[in-house]
Image (tube, rainbow, N blue to C red; front, top):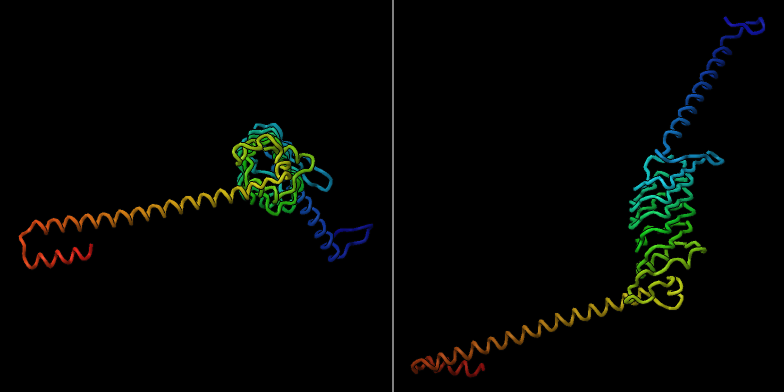
Length: 271
């Protein structure tokens, strides 16, 4: 029997004290496990730090990474992957980062971005930097429902209808709008080296040109098929006429008879 100030504690109070002590110990164990898990989830070679509110900033700049790390803390709010060797952003590469707000992929070697690359972070992401890469084109679906300001400057863009449609799906960072330039163009090399926004503001519509080109191609194809059909019909008629003439000459070379005369009259009527 325990005593407090010389007075024995009631059994019920003793049980309540023991339960409270167990709850405190359980809370400390869970907290320790959570902190250990959070620290161990930082990618190898990267540096993880906390912002106010317990959110994590993952710094992986210039670490010679060739792909997006997979073992990232779920509470990552900023992921800095600039100056690495990444070439491809696969679908759902950041799906386990529901709080991600800033994503820096600048100064890599990115050539392709999958249509679903940013699925899972379209609502949370506020800043996306894809500048200074090797992008020539990206699917417009990659930026669907994305609310972030996007940097696309200093990439070797191929200006065409697909890129024009991409610009409709995203919010370009105002500071870099004039740095999105046409390295090549679908208009026979015209506009190369010029900022894409200036080209569009001048009234150029790559999609209209694309539709016109498609219409011309369809017209040429239809004309080709029509010419083939006419040629076949002419060949078929001439070939049958030649067969009929050869048959007529053969009948003429045969001895005269009533049967041959009938055949001759019939063929002559047909011709």
